[in-house]
Every structure is written in structure tokens, then in C-alpha cells.
Length: 393
Image (cartoon, rainbow, N blue to C red):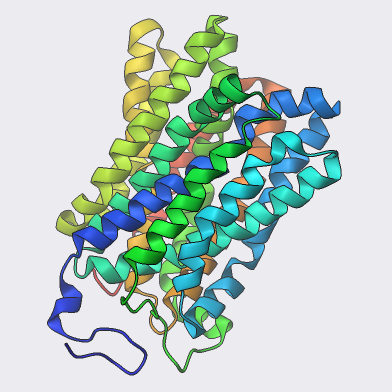
């Protein structure tokens, strides 16, 4: 087997889709993201325990996401070193702090635990897609679909697992659940024994150079992320609130979010594979056209038809990330992890800022009108798809 000086397989075997390795990383993505999804269902109990204001509660999520600003630097580090420890340690370093939230003595310790979690989340999500891309060979879209389906599935059932753990052991006693994260890290350690995970180049280039080389892909994707971000914020963060206002039934509100996230798993699983066959831009056009239209129908219908349209909205809205990740890796050049870090930093900033904007708009004009604006904003992302100059297409 021929390998380059930095440990990358340069033979034709590197173009083969390594199913076992891709599934392994996807399962670990699932196990890792289950723990990072614990905060939302625990928040009401933490608010009560520490007598927090809503502002303090919101700041917990902000602290958890602060490390995402350093994603490009983490990517540079991953490009210059072996990413083995990044991947192996992430599940355990996320599971332990998220399992200790219930026994935190005060608000300050909560912030520390969530910041550690945020660092761990970045350390996993920056290099992991690079490995998926490498193991996927010529089918990068298919690999990203598997990987992102694991994350979407975790966000679907993670809150239920957290609630189940608290029901069994109480808020202060659910910490033994960290054992599954520890086991996941151990599993990764043994599975990747003997496999070279150094996916970077010895002569890595400056981060600004990577950014400029990728500007024909990164800048249009940034505009698409912003346009899509309005729909994403409305349909994930505020969906239970919107449905509760519309129906007055909290159970239906929660069921709606489950439908959306479940179809997101299906969308993530299909989109990347389809983009390998149809082309990345075509799949993005379909998704960014289908999501706003189905969202409009969701807004202006009722009863069973409303939840039926929610299926299409979830499938299309949450299906774009695998395609974008594949595009980033195909155009990353010498610094695949740094390129992914740049993309993830932009994605975080856009998503975090837009959630606040959508919330402010909703306070002033109501969620119904805000949903209409968000769907309209989604359509504005379509022209930017045609500005993408990808090496593959």
C-alpha cells in the first residue's frame, strides 16, 4: 500500500468507500452528541435548582458555544498533528462534564462544565468530518450523510435519554450515565489501533491563505447559511412555542419537534448520497427551494396537513449540512481540518446570531409573521448556490 510522507494513503484504495470506518465515526458522532444535547431538557430543572433568570439560563448555552470561535485554530492544530486523540477523547470529555451538571454546587461550576463541554465538542466536530471525507473516498457526500445522520439522530433521542436518566436517578444522581461516553472512547481507541489518522500535510499553510483559496466556495456558503439560518432558528428553537401558541397543546408542540428532527435524520442520510450522483448544487437547490415552500404550507395549514408538511420541512431544511461539508472537503486543499474549522465557525456565528434576531422579531410582531419572514429569507439563499465554484463541479 503506497502512502505519502504524512501518512495518507495515495493508492487507488484511498478512493474506496470504507464502510466500517465511516459507520464507526457515525456511531461515535451519535454517542457524543447525545451528551451535548442534554442541556435543553435539563434547563428547567437547573433554573429551579439555582433560581436562575432566563438571561442566566440563556448564557449557559452561549458559554457552551464560545469555543466554536476557535474552530479554525483547532483545525490548524489538527492539520499539523495526528487527530487520533482528538477523536478518541471527545466522547469521554463531553460525557463527564454533561453528566455532572446535576451535582454542580453553584452557577459558576455550571459555566465551567459547559465551557469544557464546548471545547470537547469543537475538538470532535472539527477533525471528524475530515476523517469521514478521507474514509469515504470518491463518495464524500455519502460519507457525510452517514456522519450527519448520527448527529441528527442523537439530537432526536438525546433529550428523551436525559429525561429518562433523571426519572430513574434524579437530577443529582444521573451522573453514572457518563459510563457510555467512557466506553465510546475506549471503543474508538481499540478500533483505530494501527490506522493512520494524520490527515494533514507537513507543510501546512497560514489560515488566511486557506480562507482566500476557498473563498469561491466559503463565501457563497456563508450567505446560504445566513439565509437558511432564519428557517433553522424558527423551526428548531421556536417550533414548540409556535405550536403551543397555535394549538394550546404542549404535547402536540413537543411531538412536532420530534417529527422535524426525525425527518432531519432521513434528510441528512439521503442528501449527501444524492449529491454524489446528481451534483452538490442541484441537491442544494432542491433543498433550499423545498424547505421554504413546505414551511409556508406548514404556516398556513392546520390539523393533520400541518404536521404532514412538517415532514417535508424537516427533510429538506436539515438535509443541507452533509452536502456543504462534502463541498468544503473537496475544496480544502492542504488544510482539510482548518477549512472545516472555518466553515463550522461561520455556521456557529450565523446560527447563534440569527436565533437572537428571530427572537427579537417574534417579540415585536409575533411568531406567525416571523415564520413567514423566515421562510422568505430562505428563498434568498438560492441565487448564491450558482456562485459556488467547486472543483468537483
